[in-house]
Image 1 (cartoon, rainbow, N blue to C red):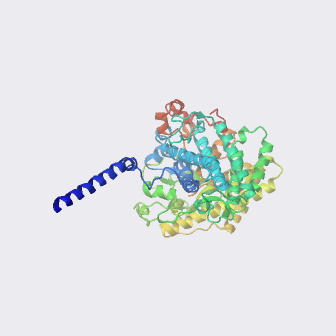
Image 2: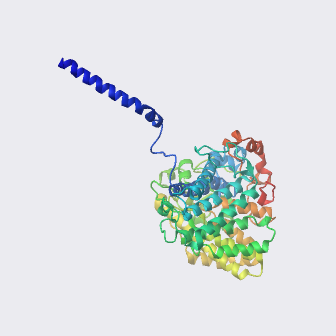
Image 3: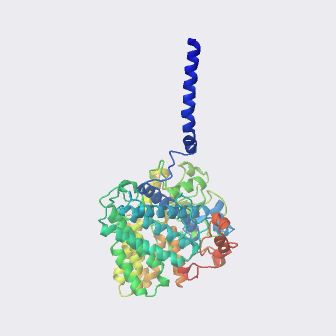
Length: 537
């Protein structure tokens, strides 16, 4: 009997356990596919981390800048997709070319809109005005880049989610470049208001963004004021971008000077991602060069340096490395004369790695990515003053400051490459060298044609590891749209095949009928300028 009682107890326990288990089974099954390390929701401040890093790494430092560097002849493409872009063999007109960049920029737009919605509607986020302002600035930034490279493109219906997190619009409508820029400027104005003269603080229950902002969050006492300066810097950039469409150019040029005066006072304040450590966090140009080794020194760029006795060449370049050892961190030699570089001809290079010299900055592992730099702001000031007329002395001073800051930025990248990867070489681009160059070479060219020399110097300064080739590409198209042929490119394909814009990404060319219709066979990139460059879309 004792034995049977024991069995009965076990059966009773088993039955009770089964009953409890069956009661829990439905809840357990509901959670079986949930990943606790991938939550469906997160405080806005954590989204700011990803938004800032992705904007810098992907939107600024990624494919948009890489392809722009080839089209604008900061580099020559000599292998794989960048060679095909160089010789215009399919690459500029296919929907797959920019698909990764397309996905990334729209992901950033979505995340920025999510943060803004949280800060406006979530009770735990209300009062987080600095967080909201950062999101609005980065939404403006990514929206402007999308409009700049694609022209008319989806925007207003992108990144809007249903309560369950699914997209509200699976096939978002196309918006005009003009309407996107209206929203860009409104978002910057909204951010400026939220930042309250740089005194704003996050007060929401979820907590301040603080150090989750990897751009300016290291000093929370100046965080709001630095983002305010960035907003004004971007207003200066975008007002100049739209100058060809201005109803009153004099007023807009004066506004640019006002925005510049409220922006960065020096390079330490510029908006940049400076988290690369030459270990686990790496500059995107270095990452691409290491994995693909597809860029070589541009012949037309070096010609411009030579014409001006510019000290940036040869020291910003490496001699050819037939061994290919450079990709393993040794074997390269910094050029000491122009002939030693063996620059690749634009438009007609051999598709051959290690045959030509290359830009030393391709190997700057920890050079920061610049969202908008101090030297860009000073170039904008110089251009505005040139265009206004009667203020050439002020324009010359602004240009000198811009050139000096640009020298310092490039010099830092050269030193970074020497210290972290090349293990040899040096830079001599300090303020004294820049000032001597300005006095001996730039000043006379400026006196002869102030606006032209300002724009050429800006073009030269945007060569580097910091992702500024896209802005050089935008400037070139803007100037051409105004009939100002200041920057001479040498690729023979440009007579009929200069990419006036980038093609839409394959994901939406396949899935969105409006995008598919606008893309067509992709040849429109050679014939249709964007709206702000004189086109109609």
